Image 1: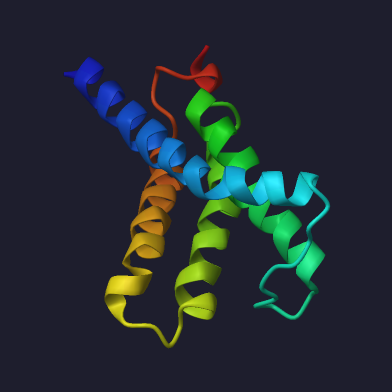
Image 2: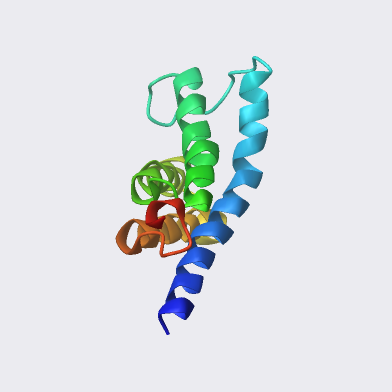
Length: 123
């Protein structure tokens, strides 16, 4: 039974993080190409907003997939999705912000549960 729980935790960790990369990698490529035009939902500037989003949508998901510093890595990823759901898409209908909510809930679950046995954190 413990093995099934660890498999479930690995799926909870790896699947959403892998899907998150499909959103983050284009932003990373944009940033590496020198294009820093981006939304500024927190009023800190476009470049810092893009940089923080890349951390939350690329760097942290990679760490979560590996299960390295998992709980800590899930915090910026969750914050990024919180901003997406409650700031960027605040006035949008639920079907638009649903994706951000799903990622947010997955990352919050990872914060509470940890990575499970199939991770670098447990080795």
